[in-house]
Length: 507
Image 1 (cartoon, one colour):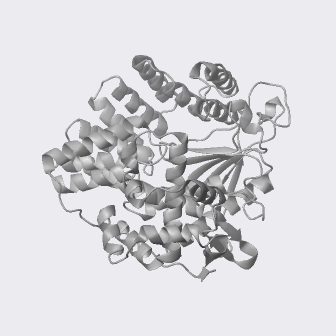
Image 2: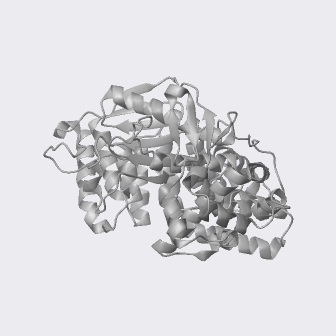
Image 3: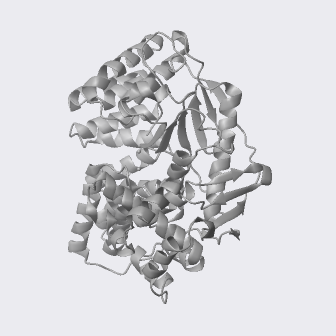
């Protein structure tokens, strides 16, 4: 499982399969904001607004997995291209969408008619899978990797039925079912050790994902009360393995029961969960995107779209888009930030950050860029502190700004000053491994060793797919250091949102 927005194709000369800037013959771009999504797209305005409404409906449907009272805050960025071929000029692999994470949350890039979520033939796998990860991180204080991926696999087969005001969860995942029925599955003990396995081959990885889906589907179908109790314990912050053992105490021969579940029952005996789905009507705000914004988004797409294309091949396209954006709008913040982040020389990066701030003195992102550039250049001075404080002032709901300020105080051994920012970042992103890592550092420096150790355990639990290797190493190394200094203690629990039982079960 990574950030910010981008959009579509390259070079001048308009064709129907490319998402160009309108000044180059492309379709107009709009941004539609709903309570929980920001959709940037070159679909026509009515269709774009319908897409935002349907994404809100998908979110509401997924929330039924945790009961109707669970409704966390936060916004997800969506880039929606008008056809299925639009992504092809940004990558050398054929994809219809991908997900990543920016500094402040998840980003989904989708193509074609992936917005038509309520059509009978709609494939919402990517949207549902990634939104489930996002929501489960807010619902469950702790979650082992097999549970995180198993829930995402279970919920990615969601079916929305607005005409019946219902949502169907837990339909059979054909690809995963085929995988486990033909090639077997991993035991639960093996899945508990998944995070320690390191890099796996494609075939091994597929088996772990399919096995996680299978166990979650099995638990929800055959042991729903125990599985609900397990998740409630995770919501309170209990250690995952201990929570599972307590919830499933007395359950006998789960492996044997699972074998019969797969081998002898077949598709007809897999049950789905049906839950109510209320109509979604929400306030939308729509605005046209400027030409410079479109070019900036295209530049980011060249940088971030998956594929084996090396950076040397991507850079000319990025440079062309950034040059066009600058020509249309000198000093465009998005372009200057992108150039900053793609500059390796720390002192050149610092110079660019100062230039950006001089042009945009009331931009919180400009202040944050200056702070990051100062840090990269080795300047842990009062200037960096002032820049980070100003960024937080201008961007009070920014996870990265709050976590950056807390991290600065942790690096300069001023944990008392960093405590409030660390708490604010944790409130905004309770399932963010980087935020948890910073929070644990502040606690450790304050001498709150058991709490620091527990927070670092939480950070390890949140190292899911897409986590950068550098962060993964940092989090695991820090846990080992805390264990050596603090010793293992009994996990401490905290209150969290309760898990509601499924609305109904239908064969």
